[in-house]
Image (cartoon, rainbow, N blue to C red; front, side, top):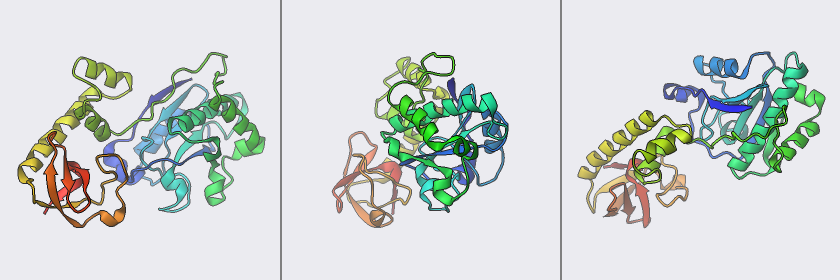
Length: 289
């Protein structure tokens, strides 16, 4: 089995995955038809329906359609439901007809679920059925064949035995993919070094170097423009879209969209110290008033 990406265009994020997400669960689905993983994802990212998922898995591969740090509309539990807002959705293909293809797809899906749990530092108790969120009988064929049977396969893969149907070890595990903007900030902060090392590292992790570099340039241009407006004593607000302080801690909603004073500009030019909170906030997450 192999992993690959066929990501929805950012222009459709407002339809398919409008919210940032830190996953807390993995939700398992059956597709209820007989399309391949590629075709499932291709259809999902091409239409304008508010229905979406992160991975489709068939007997040969796992295809990712949406980044795992974005939400999807997969669980039917409402706009703020935990299934929709806090879980990675994995669709198992070929469940309409079943048979050998479905059995192989299900085994591959167990590996994908285990890899995602480990990638996000989640335990086995964080696996959910679609049924758990809204009562729908899904994953229908997996439930017919026995949920505990499927979870036994997940446990086996989670604990280190992730052989595929041919008996070979699955080494092509998924990287927990960030969106292009997050990767661009990693580049700016030096995580990927300089070229040619930068290009090699980014491409090894599955990112499009040219797209990342374009975003880096956009951010730096924006920071330079913003920095010219900023000074010690400037009045700013923390944007509602801001998720974390520069130190990594979450920014509580009660601190957003309020007026603060800049106490210090960081020498790197990418963040400011907020006087009232005594916390560093990225320039991208503030608006000068």
